[in-house]
Image (cartoon, rainbow, N blue to C red; front, side, top):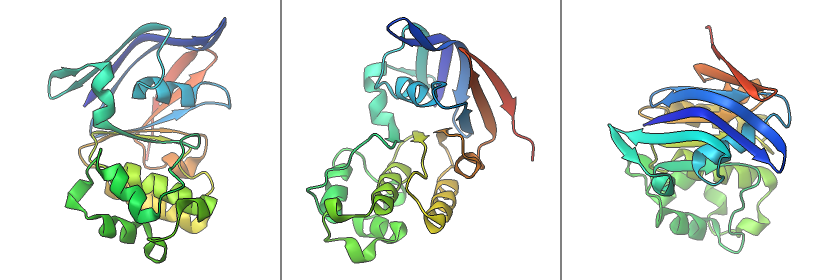
Length: 213
C-alpha cells in the first residue's frame, strides 16, 4: 500500500491543526508521527484512516498500482486509539466473533488462538465491561495487530498498559510488520522504537527525519 499526502491541512473553525503536509507512506515501512501535545498527531491519523475529512490538499491511497477510494479505505486498515470503544456487553469470545465478521485474522488464526496470543485465556467468557483498563487495551491492540489489513494505525498504543503489557505490544507488533504499512502516533519512545521513519509535526508544518540505528 502507498499513501500520498499533498499539501494536506486540517483545521477546526479558524484554527489550523496542521498544514502544508506533503509526504508519502509506503508498505513495508513503519512510521512514527511525533509532536508535542495538541500538534495534530491523532488528528492526522483520523484523516489518514478516513474517519475525519481534511480541510485542504489531497490524500491518495493505492495498492499494487490500483487506486483505493477514500470511502473504501476502511476495508484495508486496522486502527486502535484511546478514544475508540469496545462493545462492553459482549464477552471476550463474543467480541472477537463480532470483529472477525468484518475483518478476518492474519495467519489464519482462530479466535481461540488469538485469545492465547493476547494472554487472555482465563477471560474468554468474561464480559468486556469487567475487564481492567489494561486488559481492554490489550484486546484493542490484539484485534488491530492481528486483523488481516495492509494498513495498521496505532494512536498512543500503550495507554493503560503496565510494563508486561508494553513488552507484549512490542513483541507482537514487531512480529506482524511484514508486508504492512504501520503508522504510530506517539511521544513515547517505547511505542515507536521499531519505526524506521519519523515524521515530526511542529507549528503547522512537518519535518521528516530518518532514524539511525
